Length: 180
Image (cartoon, rainbow, N blue to C red; front, side):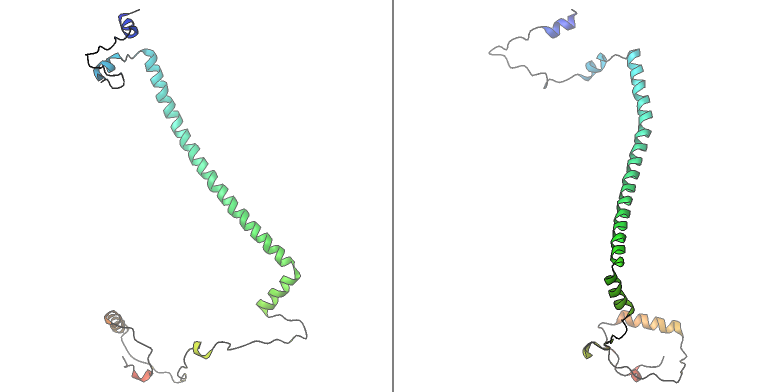
């Protein structure tokens, strides 16, 4: 055995009653210079370090390709799932259209088809009078032309809209609007 080996395997001295307790090896301070001095670089260590660096250079791009391919596979699986869901919906719709009762009901609802001899009742103006728009003035057949500069009219309109404090109700009479 060497001196270092003998020192390592020597029995630990028993603590004396009056002496302070020794620190355990976990709490003992490590001298960095002593630790770094104990590391020896041999040819084998250099070769192994070179192999580790080479392995990193070889594996990093491979792992990157693997990760990107897994992402593409996940995206394609999601796309296949969505497409299969759409196919299932279209097959259900195809089965509905194969039913003659469904085809008849769709022809009646969408195209207003009826069997010969049936009486068709269409209800117009089924809305209450309160929900209908107010009556408008009759449309005149006379064409009038107003000369105005559209740019100044636009500026006036934007300025008026920006400076208005409250909302204005609908105009009662078209004659109240000043000619521009």
